[in-house]
Length: 227
Image 1 (spheres, rainbow, N blue to C red):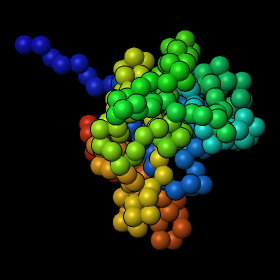
Image 2: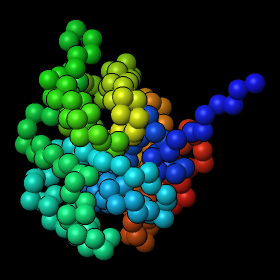
Image 3: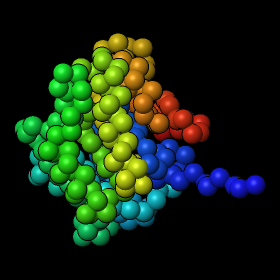
C-alpha cells in the first residue's frame, strides 16, 4: 500500500538525480560553454534552456581549458544571465587540469583501480557540497580501452557511485567518432557508453550550420526536443 517516492531531477525531464549523464559533440562546438551555463543556472536558481533546474553547487573538472579561459567564459556567462561573477562564485568551483594526468580510473590486469586523483575529487565534492559534477572530458579521465565494454561499465559505475553519494548528477563530455558524426548518432566506442548513462544529449550542427542540442536518450522520460 506504499507509494514510491517521486523521481528527483537536477534538470527537469533531462538530467535525473543520482545518475550519470553525457553530453557528446564535436570539439569546438561549445560543450564547455553549454555546461558552464548549466552550472551558473544552478548557482543562481535560473532556468537552463528554458528547463527548470534544481539549485545547487557545482564542480567543473576541466581537462582542456586553463584557468584564464574558464574565467573569460564565466565572465561572459554571468553577463548573459545578468548577474555578477560574485553571485556565482561561491557556488561554483572551476578546477583546471589542462596538461596534467587526469585519469580517474585505471586497469591493472583487467581490474579497475581508482586513482588518487579520483579520491581527491570525491573528497572535494563532498566537502564543497556539490550536487553537479561536470567531467570534461571522458577521454582524458578514462585510462582504458573505450571499446572494452567491461572497462567502460566499470568507469561509469564508478561515476555513478559519486552521483549517488552527492545525490546529484555527474555529467561527462565526449567527442563522437567519424562514423558517429556521419550517421548522426554522435557516438564513439562501444555501446556501453550509450547504455550505461541514463541520459545523453548530442550537440551538433544541422545542414544549415546552425548549432542544435538534441536529446537522443532518456531512460526516465522522453528525450529532450532539439533546441
